Image (cartoon, rainbow, N blue to C red; front, side, top):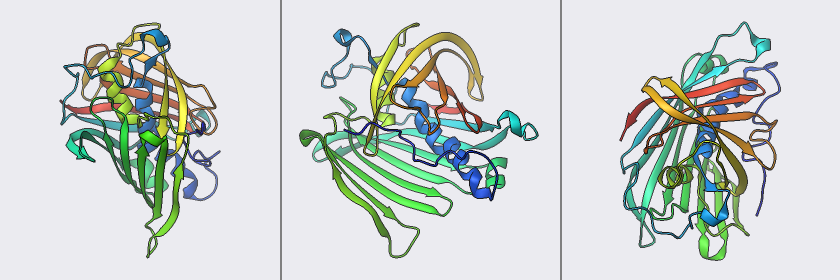
Length: 305
């Protein structure tokens, strides 16, 4: 099993010098990768293994969410101190939906959809348009992922990525196509071995945490997060209670600090925080990350249960 950084090398540029392509990485961080990372802070199996819930344990009779739930986030970038002449800028929005019930190889499944769209001043400055669409098929009982389909559309970069998990044999198959050229070019087509029997993508893990965890103050949680063929161990620390205001309203929350136990969360490290409501819904309503190109934040702007 590979343990490594979930973000690509070169994702975060060391500065803004040069052509506007140097600004592309923070746009991607804001609109897609940070939105993906936002939910890792809500993934959790308790550090005390004696009280951990088994992945095969039946799901609770009631969920704090329902099929059809939609979460929409406004994403903003705050430049680093040495770019003091630049104001905070809108970067785009990200949407997460528990889209519906489906079937996978004869079994019931849920379809989770994540979309990221760039907008605002930062996009005009960078000159790149992002319209990503990801779909995740997951077991509704264990929330272990069956399959993933990603359509990455980031400026000139256009990729279709399909991943299938073979739980019984601890393998996955990944196929990546470059569809920016015609005919499409195969970039990867391989099986990866030594994958855990139950792998949760970021969003399946989020729903699993909202269903099973309480996030008591002072508690710590660890989880293995899968992204493509990579698996990363994350520790989540429940730090304090706070009131936060978002475009969707004011919420009583628990602030969670996320620490990657093997390497930084980003290429050059970085700090990450997320705020989830302290009510039974455990909604992730705000997140914030410090990176080598400033700070990014996301706030819930719309919610449909």
